Length: 464
Image (cartoon, rainbow, N blue to C red; front, side, top):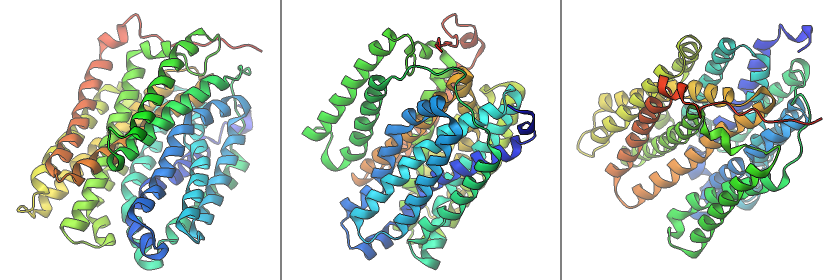
C-alpha cells in the first residue's frame, strides 16, 4: 500500500461498513413493509414472497463468484460496480409500478449486493494486514452487520408508517452515494499479487449448487419437500456439489481448494456461520410474527420491542473483536452459542399465549442479541485468516455465503414449522442452532484443533 494510503484505514473501514450496511439492512428492513407492498401493488402472498426470495437467491448464488472476480480484476473496481448497481437498483425498486418489476429490480439490487460484502471484507483485510488490527476492524464491521440485521424491522416500521413502503428503498440511495464517493477518493486498488487462471467450470458448478439449494430451501414450504420441483433442485445441488470437489482437486489453481476444509477452525467457522444466521433468520421471523400477529402490535411498536436484541448486537461486536485480538476466537464463540441458545429457550415460555410477560420476552431478546453480537467477529476473522491474502475475496465470500444460506434456511424452516402450527418447535430449532454454535466452537477452537496436523492453511500456487 502506498505511503499516502497508510493513514486511511479508518476511512477505508467506514467505506466497508457503509457497503455491508446496505446489504445487511436490506435483508430485513423490507419484512415489515410487505403488507403495504401487497395493498399497493395488489399482489398475492406467493408473489409477495418473491420480493424477499429473489434477493436472497441471487446473493447466495453469486457471492463466491464476485469475491473471486474481485481478487483477479481489482477489488476497488468491483466495489464501485457493486455500489452503482445496488444504489441504482434501490432507486428503481422505489419506483416499481408492479410486483414483477419490483422483483426484477430486487434482483438488480442483489447483483450489486453480492459484490459488496465479500469485496468490502477483502479490502478491509488488505488495509489491516496485522492480525490484531484486523480483528479489531472486523469487530467494528461485525457491529454494523449486527445492528443492521436487528434494526431493520425497527427502521422499516418507522419509515413505512411515516412515508410509505417506497421510502424503505430510498434510504439506500444516500448511503450508497456516500460510500461510492468515499471509495473513489480513499480506497486504493488491490488484487491478488499475480493473476490466477480463470475457473469458469468451477464457478458454474458452485453457482449451480448454491442457487438450486437455496431455491429448494426457500420454496419447499410452499411446494412440499417431496414435490418434483424441489426434489429436482436438491438432486441438482447434490450433483453439482459432488462434481465440484473432484474437479477442483484436479486443478492446479482451483477456485476453492477442498483441502482447505481439513483445517478444523476454518471449517468450524463456516458451519457456525450457517448455524448462527439460521438462528437469526428464524428468530427475527418468529419474533416479528409473534409481536404483530399474536400481540396485535403495529410495525413501529413491534420494531421497538426488538430493541433489546438490537442494542447488544451493536455493543458486543467491538468487544468480541478485542477479545479475538487478545485471546483468540474461542471465548467469544462460546459466549455466542450460549447466548443464542439461552435466548431461544427463554422465548419458549415468553411467547406462550397465556404468559404475556414483556419482561421475560425482552430478556429472551436481549440474551439472543448478546449471543449474536459475539458471533460475527470471530467467525469472520477465522474465515479470512484461513486463506492467503491473495484469496481474501474468496475467503470473505465463503463466510458471506454461509451467512446468506443460513438466513434463507432459518426463514424457510421456521416459516414452515410455524405454518404447521408448531410454535414450540420453531423456538427449539432456534435454540438448537445456538447450541450447535456452542458445540462446534468447543470442538474446533481448542488446543487440540490447533495442533491437528491436518489443520493447516492451504497456500495455493499462482502463475504469472
